[in-house]
Length: 289
Image 1: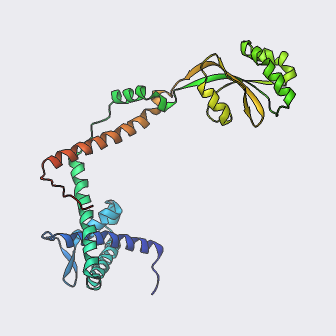
Image 2: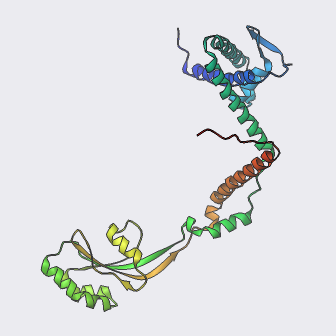
Image 3: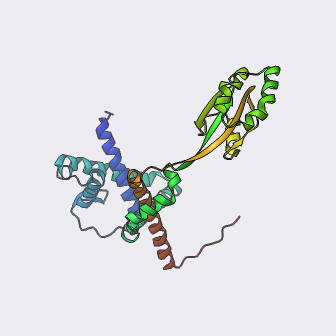
């Protein structure tokens, strides 16, 4: 059998899938009275102008250039004929359990279409206003970059200490703790200790975990004990906390609007579902354990 071109294969598969859904749905419930022009019959199963138009609209989004193209319509009709034929054959080849499974799946698909139509008509979300965007922004500034950052001073040595060097730093620890200007200390008394001085904003990941964990616990003007990471000493002090501002509202308002629109739709769907269930006689049956 000669293989179809890739474009024709894709079109053929799409049409079969769509028509299969429509055909399966027809098997679940009694078909409505058809008043459309009949274009073909397959063992008394009719294919109408409406069937072809539906597939065109579903597949090509009402593109008038396609809708009015006779060649496209012929291909779609041929695909629907093939689909009907396959349906007829499989109804004879499949056992009843397989047929019932297809009918159940078709029923679920049909219900999805009704649900979609219901929600489009009844679940109308409340419009997102500028006031809602403004409130969400100011109540969630941390989501847009506002954060408190600790400013830290760190005395460190990038090599392991021998026993004498370790004792020397421990001896000077009391002096370090009462010294206000650590940078000056390093440039003078600290030279013999081979310590280096760093002043930086603290962000997660900038230091080893052991050092970061200590910084997290420190308050302003609080010094740490000596922290050793792989034999290298660190002494840390938090000197200030700086609040970094959030991104301006103008740069994030579109993002907020999309998020609120989704939340409004979810809220509308939930309320609509609640209302329709209240109108029904719903009984939940206990399931066996």
